Length: 320
Image (cartoon, rainbow, N blue to C red; front, side, top):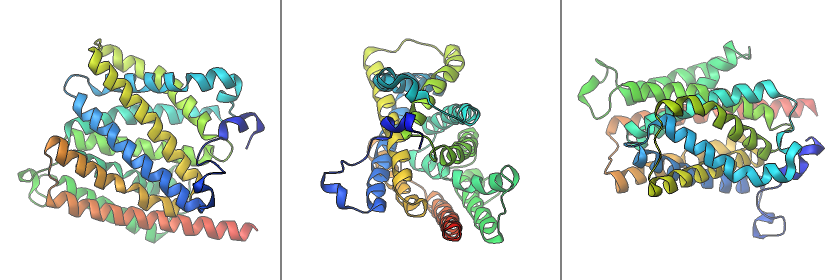
């Protein structure tokens, strides 16, 4: 890691605390559970505020609150907080992430939390065609097959007209579902960029760039739906931004500390937390097709993650 960003690499369990003796995967798993909990808190607030604040406006306030949280770091470290040798990737990642955030906020506002969360996991499925057509990576038949099965799981969940009962069920295809699928596609780009950038960038540097560029890119959409929030709503919007920033930090730290193959299953606890929040706070009950389709998506994405982990392990052993 670049020495200029070394002061920002701090984070995670204290080296002298109780967690110091745990393995990296266990510590990473704890960060991933924290990420799942904070993600559920964020999406709950998104849905609660959705009737008065459109997705574009929520995205602006979320990014503004995140930037305010990071201001002390930016002021203290100045140049180190923005130190990067890959500005192009960072800008593209921020643009894809901002548009993806707007689309996902819209989906969380309009769909049951469990359904929206289940569709959000298709980002792993999108990584397969991206690897083949964008990165020009060799993709074997097993990964292709797992991705195809995963997208069949998506069809089970969204049930297009004429498939598995179509619109007669609890949850049929519509603009919110398409928005979440498009959001997952864009987030697949951000995940790929994060994997590349964490090799020589501290997590805090990525958070700073994401907050600054995200706020700038969110301004145009916010202007079209602008309204000054009530004091209570402003507090909730700020809280959403704080939780979202904490969520991003927990996820980056978990993926940095633990192995990707071991961390991926932990991330799926979001489904449990979101289903519980949807049931107790909004009276949402996941349908049978949602549960079945989500199970197919989870299994296929876990298989893809496991295969990628094995390939990375083999490549590392050969390089030694």
